[in-house]
Amino acid sequence: MNLLVVGSVALDTIETPFAKASETPGGSALYISISASYFTRSIGLVGVVGDDFPKDVIEDLRSRGIDLKGLQIVDGGKTFRWGGRYHYDMNTRETLFTHLNVFSNFNPTIPSEFKSSKYVCLGNIDPVLQMEVLKQVESPKLVIADTMNFWIERKYGELLETLKHVNVLIVNDAEARQIAMEPNLIKAGKKILKLGPDVVIIKKGEHGAVLIIDGTIFTAPAYPIESIQDPTGAGDSFAGGFAGWIAKTDDISEENLRRAVIYGSTIASFCVEDFGINKIKNLSWDKIQERFMAFRELMRFEVE
Ligand code: AMP
Image (cartoon, rainbow, N blue to C red; front, side, top):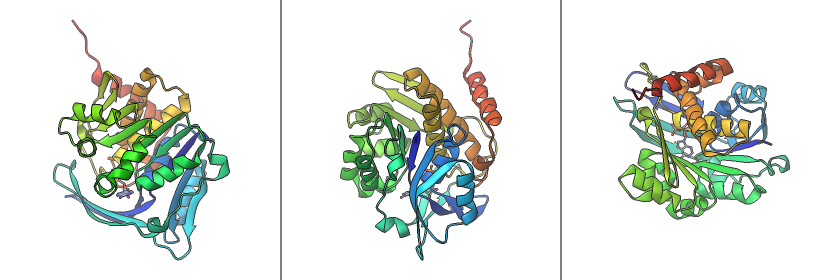
């Protein structure tokens, strides 16, 4: 397996100042694996759902070539549910509820064919579960991970333990500040590098993303979108695009990590254009390439 994806598979209830969606399919593993499926056909997903999770979504994942041997479907169980409300700026949000449901008793079992995965993308889930996964994989070339305020607040010690085994940490600005206990983002990024990761990527919503590797900083803008429908999953689709590009090219040089940041930003920019997974499930390689190239134009300037 080229890319192993672990994370939540959810039914989300999302409110924006302009619209609402109830029980729409989401979760970190869903966003990551769909996004990465445009880059590689060798993806294994590990997660858990109840038997209330829509079968057509599972079929859609299968049709993308995503191997679902590691997706447990609990008979009579209820899928993880999350509710969030966005403020007027569509950038800040509050969590309305988190119902772990089948995730409360989940023990990730990595199928034997997935254990030798070259790349591992640990979506946002309990850091204890992220660590359980890492104990079962053999010797991945790169471990990419994400987390969230929910886990930073409840499992800080466990998260610090997991971070020791992570190569690339992808977090948003508030999460970076929370992990590092440092208000300045660059200082926060550098502090996180001391906790284990070799690379940290800090997402700043509509203000783009910063990649920090040791002494080097690369900043990328967000693609300017005039009609943002729903920011949910933007962070996860960023991670999916990033991980997908790295897995496709099998190149972890700094230059290629920069390209991966732009591919991540590209998929995230599509994600926010519609509710839930609606936009990212209908992309094509040509559309992705076109927007990727538009980023270049967005950043181009002449010295004289
Ligand atoms: P993002 O907007 O990229 O930060 O991710 C949103 C997704 O994270 C939603 O689809 C939620 O289902 C999922 N999510 C929210 N809270 C949690 C949590 N505590 N653990 C795992 N996944 C979560």
